[in-house]
Length: 254
Image 1 (cartoon, one colour):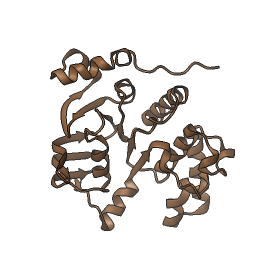
Image 2: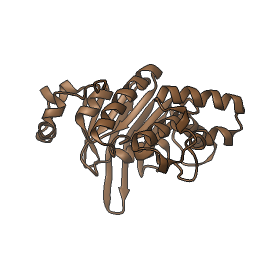
Image 3: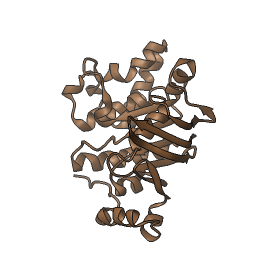
């Protein structure tokens, strides 16, 4: 679905990405993981066309990703994007945040309402919260609204940039379970950025570890544990060994 070919990117004198080659398969969840500044979020922004590479190519469904024009608009209708806290507009209610683009596109009001209620059920957001503003919602509720907004146009792919990083552990565990169920039920192409190796393994069939703007290893969690390709990979896994060997479990019912 997404493909990066020899992608390099500079910020001033700093090399953010150094010859990245990456393919994400259709219908599969891929997790990008690595230390801060390793290039994870940069890859997501390139996939969405928010930034462009200095060298190399970024493709979506076989076509070059454009930053502007009709092709860029078409891409953003096919790709949902979720960031920490949902990235919601504070002056709009949850309902208006979710339906904003559909209304701008001129979709039928009844169809919008049906889709809104369908997504509220999918994201397990009580419908009575749809009239609240983001400041009146909890962090977990804002994240659910952000996911609903990303799914409103039924995109082919989802990009999530550390969507659970700012949540407390109990809420995070609950959302991990719900998100994984949503990914599996919708069978969409998902690219997820996280710092947590256990979380990456919980969500993704394909884990990509980056360091200094380069991919140092990719594959399943078992490959990282049993066959690390460098001392850095071994140290990265060892630093998270208690969670890496025991991925998050579903929270128990109260």
